[in-house]
Length: 56
Image 1 (spheres, helix red, strand yellow):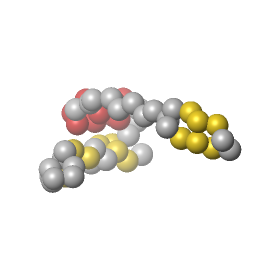
Image 2 (cartoon, one colour; image 1 turned 180 degrees about the vertical axis):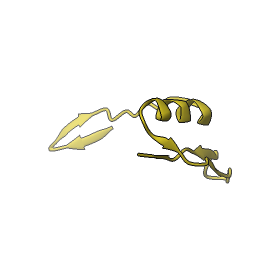
Image 3 (spheres, one colour; image 1 turned 90 degrees about the vertical axis):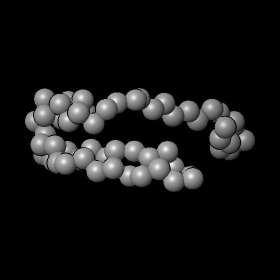
Image 4 (cartoon, one colour; image 1 turned 45 degrees about the vertical axis):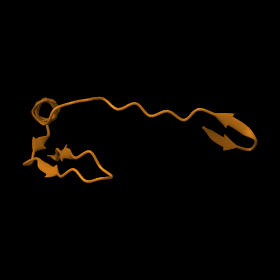
């Protein structure tokens, strides 16, 4: 919840589960060039992820 000027409202973020190959395909379809994906390893505070970089 977030309160601004005495008004409380929900602040929700939704994440979509996508894979690196699918995101690269979508990027190509939009005219972007995929760079090699990079892995960020899991830690006690982070679940790990793959970063997809698109240039264009």
